[in-house]
Length: 91
Image 1 (tube, rainbow, N blue to C red):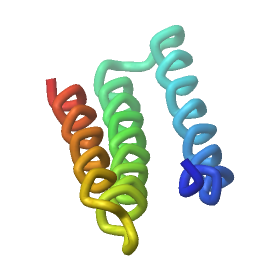
Image 2 (cartoon, one colour):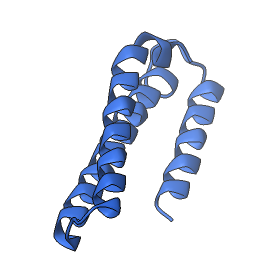
Image 3 (tube, rainbow, N blue to C red):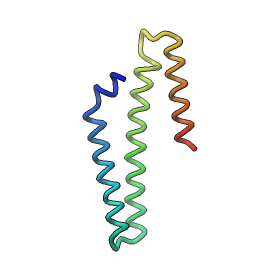
Image 4 (cartoon, one colour):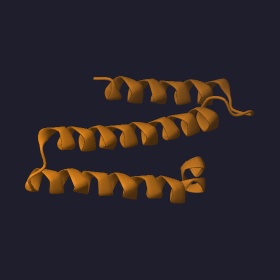
C-alpha cells in the first residue's frame, strides 16, 4: 500500500505517542494513581487509537475506493476490505 508508505513518518509518530500513553497507564497502575486518573489515561489511549484508525480508514477510502482510474472490481474489493475491518472493530 503506497499510501501508507507516503504517510509512514506521521503514522509512526502517532504510534510512538500511543506507546507513551500506554506506558503512562502502566506507570499509573503500578503507582498510587487513583481510578479517575487511570480512567482518563485509558480514555486518552482509546481516543488516540481511534484517531489513528480514522486516518488509515480515510487513506484507504481515498486510495482503494474513491481514486480515479480504479476498476469496478478494485473499488469493490477496497470497499469489502473496509467493511470487514469496520465489522471487526465494532465488535
